[in-house]
Length: 405
Image (tube, rainbow, N blue to C red):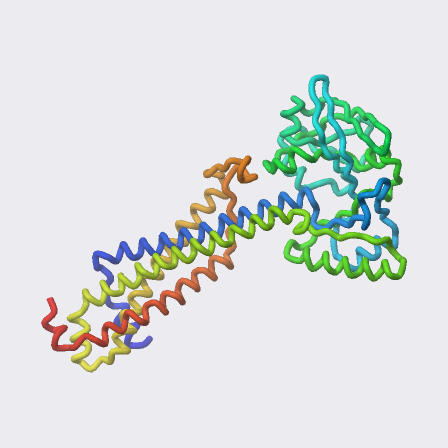
């Protein structure tokens, strides 16, 4: 242990401004941690919702807007996908516009055909009824509709209604049964999509069990989706040149939900502003506290100089003392922030308007790595801020400080 540290540890911190300084640092750290956790949680929840509807990667026929176009899960295409992407969930998808009609009302909808893997995200958002097994052949044509659609048509689980489909120049009608109702609070998607067995839609469209409107891929590490999509584009193009697979278009969830992801990117600017403002508050508080400590111990500084202590040694003593304040503020801020975030994560204390935010409560995501990086950054910046103000000690002479009152 150096002499400066030994002296600093023996000196008490009892100046009137010390509690205020510790509280200021703790409050700044608490607000910074909560801002990062809330924005991270919000981005994570919205991305999960978009991926739940759009899938991580989707493969479409290159010209999928022409009548009768579809994509077939051939052995060569499946082998091409397996060679480019490592994913446990690869299956056909089929979307078909429809009109749901009851005795008193009707609603336009897009039915998404679901197969063996189902839709785990929608299954986790069920608010009434039970998610059916879409892989089994059922005669009652079960559908899962959103709470928005259920309210518009006054439907509940086990209710039956007519679904009308315009395919080509023909009108088809099927009687379907409401198996479950989901609510993701993502109104743009909720009012648009319902889910049904893909086998039912394949029969309606007159295609075989290997043909759909897209091939969906899920189960990829969220951080590697874009890389996987690019690898798949390259592999599909290479195979297309060999006439092994048809021309395809690959779309990742970032492309399908670009509007929402661009909106989420703006939140990073808000976080940066908050971090800068809170950093300035903490820095100003810390520097002011250092001046208070120095002024409180002017006579001690003169005595140390008279005993032969160098300015560098004395500066280190006061920097160590101020660092103790930073540590107290950091510990207090971390404890308060993590306690509040944990309570919000468990009990959803603070609500949100789902019409505006797509969520009915404030989401949080606590990342210990982020907490550690923020704490280390606060310590390093604090040490840098303390160096320059500590030079005031060099201007004090022993003779004047011994007469200081």
